[in-house]
Length: 102
Image (cartoon, rainbow, N blue to C red; front, side, top):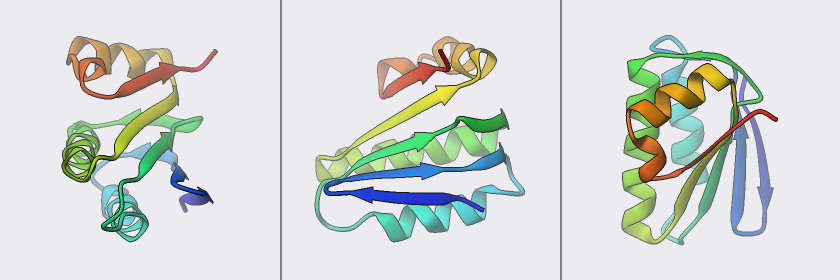
Protein backbone atom coordinates (compact mmCIF):
# COMPACT_ATOMS: atom_id res chain seq x y z
CA UNK A 1 0.00 0.00 0.00
CA UNK A 2 1.36 3.39 -1.00
CA UNK A 3 0.67 6.44 1.15
CA UNK A 4 -0.12 9.59 -0.84
CA UNK A 5 0.12 13.07 0.70
CA UNK A 6 -0.90 16.20 -1.22
CA UNK A 7 0.52 19.54 -0.11
CA UNK A 8 -0.54 22.24 -2.55
CA UNK A 9 1.38 21.71 -5.79
CA UNK A 10 3.51 19.02 -4.17
CA UNK A 11 2.68 15.34 -3.96
CA UNK A 12 4.51 12.82 -1.80
CA UNK A 13 4.12 9.09 -2.40
CA UNK A 14 5.56 6.69 0.18
CA UNK A 15 5.85 3.15 -1.19
CA UNK A 16 6.44 0.34 1.30
CA UNK A 17 8.66 -2.72 0.98
CA UNK A 18 9.99 -2.97 -2.54
CA UNK A 19 9.70 -1.19 -5.87
CA UNK A 20 9.90 -4.25 -8.06
CA UNK A 21 8.04 -5.84 -10.95
CA UNK A 22 5.42 -7.17 -8.52
CA UNK A 23 4.66 -3.77 -6.96
CA UNK A 24 5.27 -1.38 -9.86
CA UNK A 25 1.75 -1.61 -11.34
CA UNK A 26 0.14 -0.28 -8.13
CA UNK A 27 2.76 2.47 -7.76
CA UNK A 28 2.40 3.38 -11.44
CA UNK A 29 -1.36 3.73 -11.01
CA UNK A 30 -0.90 5.94 -7.94
CA UNK A 31 1.54 8.12 -9.86
CA UNK A 32 -0.79 8.32 -12.85
CA UNK A 33 -3.69 9.42 -10.63
CA UNK A 34 -1.50 12.00 -8.88
CA UNK A 35 -0.37 13.65 -12.10
CA UNK A 36 -2.49 16.04 -14.07
CA UNK A 37 -2.07 18.65 -16.76
CA UNK A 38 -0.59 21.13 -14.26
CA UNK A 39 3.12 21.02 -13.36
CA UNK A 40 3.66 18.95 -10.24
CA UNK A 41 6.56 18.41 -7.88
CA UNK A 42 6.43 14.71 -7.07
CA UNK A 43 8.47 13.17 -4.29
CA UNK A 44 8.87 9.43 -3.95
CA UNK A 45 9.77 8.98 -0.27
CA UNK A 46 11.65 5.69 0.00
CA UNK A 47 11.96 5.66 3.78
CA UNK A 48 10.25 2.24 3.89
CA UNK A 49 11.72 0.82 0.65
CA UNK A 50 14.35 -1.89 1.01
CA UNK A 51 14.81 -2.91 -2.63
CA UNK A 52 14.35 -1.65 -6.17
CA UNK A 53 14.79 -3.60 -9.40
CA UNK A 54 15.21 -2.56 -13.03
CA UNK A 55 11.44 -2.32 -13.53
CA UNK A 56 11.24 0.08 -10.57
CA UNK A 57 14.12 2.17 -11.90
CA UNK A 58 12.40 2.26 -15.29
CA UNK A 59 9.21 3.54 -13.68
CA UNK A 60 11.11 6.37 -11.97
CA UNK A 61 12.86 7.34 -15.22
CA UNK A 62 9.54 7.32 -17.10
CA UNK A 63 7.95 9.39 -14.33
CA UNK A 64 10.81 11.91 -14.51
CA UNK A 65 10.38 12.19 -18.29
CA UNK A 66 6.61 12.69 -17.99
CA UNK A 67 7.02 15.36 -15.32
CA UNK A 68 9.72 17.15 -17.31
CA UNK A 69 7.33 17.49 -20.26
CA UNK A 70 4.83 19.40 -18.12
CA UNK A 71 7.36 21.46 -16.15
CA UNK A 72 7.18 19.28 -13.05
CA UNK A 73 9.99 17.71 -11.06
CA UNK A 74 10.74 14.34 -9.51
CA UNK A 75 12.61 13.84 -6.26
CA UNK A 76 13.47 10.51 -4.66
CA UNK A 77 14.20 10.89 -0.97
CA UNK A 78 15.26 8.79 2.01
CA UNK A 79 16.81 6.01 -0.03
CA UNK A 80 18.93 3.31 1.56
CA UNK A 81 22.62 4.04 0.91
CA UNK A 82 22.84 1.05 -1.46
CA UNK A 83 19.90 2.31 -3.51
CA UNK A 84 21.40 5.81 -3.56
CA UNK A 85 24.69 4.34 -4.84
CA UNK A 86 22.80 2.49 -7.57
CA UNK A 87 21.16 5.74 -8.71
CA UNK A 88 24.51 7.55 -8.57
CA UNK A 89 26.33 4.84 -10.56
CA UNK A 90 23.55 4.89 -13.16
CA UNK A 91 23.93 8.71 -13.24
CA UNK A 92 20.25 9.20 -12.45
CA UNK A 93 21.31 11.78 -9.88
CA UNK A 94 22.22 13.95 -12.87
CA UNK A 95 18.57 13.97 -13.97
CA UNK A 96 16.52 14.16 -10.79
CA UNK A 97 17.17 14.80 -7.12
CA UNK A 98 18.02 11.72 -5.06
CA UNK A 99 18.87 11.81 -1.36
CA UNK A 100 19.94 9.02 0.98
CA UNK A 101 18.67 8.43 4.50
CA UNK A 102 20.52 10.48 7.06
